[in-house]
Image (cartoon, rainbow, N blue to C red):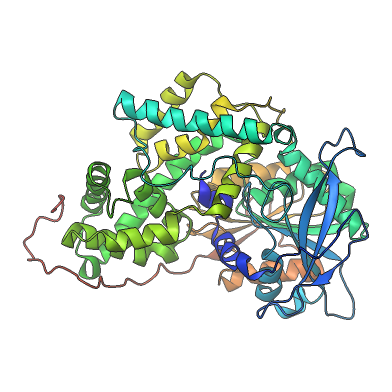
Length: 517
């Protein structure tokens, strides 16, 4: 999935927002090990340290060209240490530097104090070097509408996809063959070695769960404990997983529209969920013709509302912007929401470049565009919210300039019990994928957030989930079940609405089941 799958669980969104607070480690020399940690404290994380580590670009040439990984650490404060806890927020392409501080602050103090919590920027990402940015400005507004309603729109989006793939090959042709998930997992073991640890623990969200599964497959004897939250389906990477996400995000969008309908008094968009949804699609059509503020067209609207699928805490603000546009013809709140949720800055361009490099390299993608068109047309007919937007986000893989690797099997019976967390209604990593990973990791335990539709469910306020995580990290104990779901926690309530600043009065007899603009 697109950019909010990069960082984009609720925790990843938090860590991305905090990333700017981590000072550059420019004064830290790159070392193969042991690591030279330097203070890089922030107000929120006064004990934060930074370091860097050189690793081989090409694993077949360990003494050849070296690249540099950026790392952060919050050292343990307890008398007895349980060793390093390596953390990753997801992606591919997500920066992990700020996640060390986030996890250290969000875990119960007793659990956090026992670990050296270590974050890192994977190869190509953020403050690691080289950092990729294939085509600056690739997401500048206004882009062609994503739904290829005409041949001209399809050609325009294909030109963008080809241009991005071509730019990556021209700019980073010597690096792209070595930007992939297996290489990142191997880098993680170099980090372990540089930390001087025989074994490490790992905590990952979203794509980080796939990294954890790969690391466990490659180095099962190096794993002490592993907690994985919002689970990537290892059987669907990456083409099939995106099509499954499209359908799941459409269901989540419908849940959002139903929430707006339940709060008609606040938003004035009608009490019929289907009617509210119809207004959203008419808004998309209108923006395709006349972008709001000459900035938010149909594609940008999809970018703006996609984060609502990851985190329902965004619903009130998105609904407010939606209502202002439909009821008042006021596009300013929509532009402001785009700037907050949808716009792509240089860090986002870097993340997307690495996202593409990893996913396009990891496994085989269809090279015949007719396959993409048929699959996405079929999916769009069932799930029109973001199918084609997501297709164009991944379309450079149809033209990628490197050969693909073979998909590894992460099935594992050698690991200690792995603790898995999953929301039942999470659209970014649909529930069936969690079941598949649970089956592949023998002895793993699955904790389910029943009714949970957010992505990244631990350390987000659910005390039941966080209790399972803290007990596991502190003692190694896992809930016991029958091989299916091992523990269930109830999801928290949906957010409360916010009334638009300029809510338009309506007569009770108004036919809100149709677009009223």
